[in-house]
Image 1 (spheres, rainbow, N blue to C red):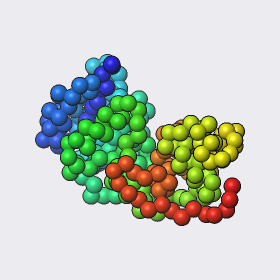
Image 2: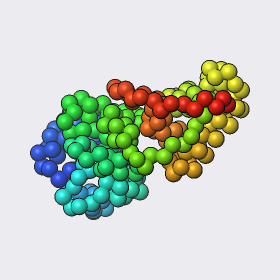
Image 3: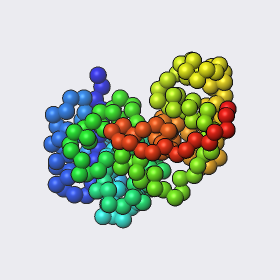
Length: 230
């Protein structure tokens, strides 16, 4: 099994040392860099001719004044997935990171097992959902409603949860080609309101944001579905 390469961007030395110690004995995960800023991390990678880490755990509030949106964008452009790591005292920072495409958001006050589990999920390609991530988006006044129909919400709940088109079709009582058409329409509706959903992971995130799927480990109220049939 290949090693999952992780870096931390945090300007608190105590946090960085604890982070390195936490993962030192975790099989399959290697901490390749500790940096105080995204600039410092990218410069280190360039200087040592290392490829970008698979995952960067990013503190959302850094002393250099950089914004989460810019930091996440730069890290993703470099080839890394990003997991936000925050004190959780500013929902606007969490929303900014979430809209920029982080895998999830972990509070620094959580038990270390939560962070370990999140990194393990990322290592196998799973979206890391958390109540902190969902709560920030739930209160986001700029999170536009895609206007999905009741049937579209049903199809999305099944498909985004991992069911393949034939199973979705059998469960919903429609043909497989109808399911594919629904998914196309759902993607189009999210695209129109500025919430792209071009991949299945994106659809999973949109379903979490809208309460169509529950956040693992937490509960959210669903937005009422419009009873407009198919």
